[in-house]
Image (cartoon, rainbow, N blue to C red; front, top):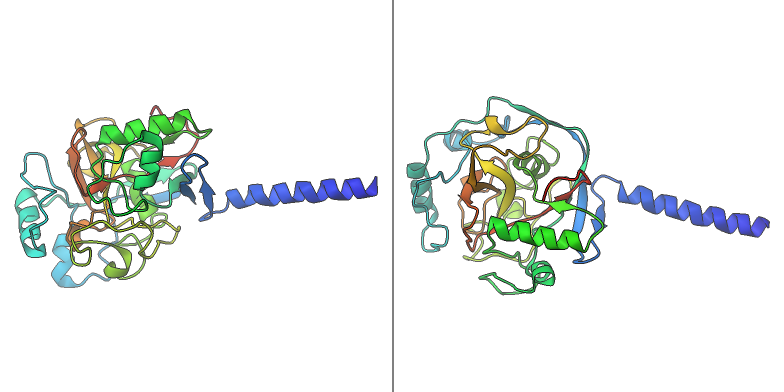
Length: 303
C-alpha cells in the first residue's frame, strides 16, 4: 500500500511539473499536427508604435525612425522587384509616404497571456495542412512559406483548427509588436542585438529568404521578428495606430480589403525591418516576401 501511494505521488508530481513547464514564460509548447512550436507572451501594457525606440539611434537616422513606415494605398511599390539597391528602395518609400508620425503614446494593455509561434510558418508546415507549397524560394522545408495571400493564411488556420484541440488565429497588429519587442520593451529590432544578427534583410539576404531560426531570438525566444518575410496580421489597414483597440485586439474598421503586415523582409532596407514598421497589402495579393505566423489563446476569436 505504501509503495502504491509512493508511485502515485511520484506520478502526480511528474504531471504537475509537466503542466507547470507548459505555462512557463518563454518555454515552448508544440502543436501535434505540424510540430509547430509556440512560446508564451506574458500579459502587460505598452505604448504601441515604438514610443521610446529612438533611444540609441544616431541623429542621422532619427528622422526616418520617428515614423511608422508603410507602403500606403495608391502607391506603385513593387514588392517582387529584386533589382533595387537600398538607396533606391528608400527613395521609393520616401516618395510613397507622407511622414506618418508615431502614435502619441497610445497605451495598449493585454489582460491575459497569449502564445505565439516561435518561427514563421515554414513550407513543410504549410504543405502538411494545405497539401501544396506556393513558395517561390523552394530551397528547403524549413524556409518560411511565402506567396500566401491573407485569405490563404486564414484558410490554413481554419484547416489546422479542424484537426487540433487548440484554436489558432492570426495575431493582431498590437500583439505582433508587443511580442516583437519582447513584451513591449524598448527594442528597435526583433532581437536585442545588431541588425545583422537579428534579421535577414536587403544587405545580407542575398536576394532570398533563409531557413527560420538562424538569426538571434528576442527576449521571449521568438525568431525572425525582423526580416525574412513580412507577416500578415488580422487587422484592417488604417493610416495611423489610433484605430488599434486599447485591449490589443485586431482593428475591424478601416480599409478591410487590405490588411496589415509587420516585420519587414529579405527584400527591405533597415528602416522597414524595425519593430514599429508597418505595411499594407491587398488581402487577395501574394508576394514572395510575405508570409505569416500564428497565435492561440483559447479566446474563441472568430477565425
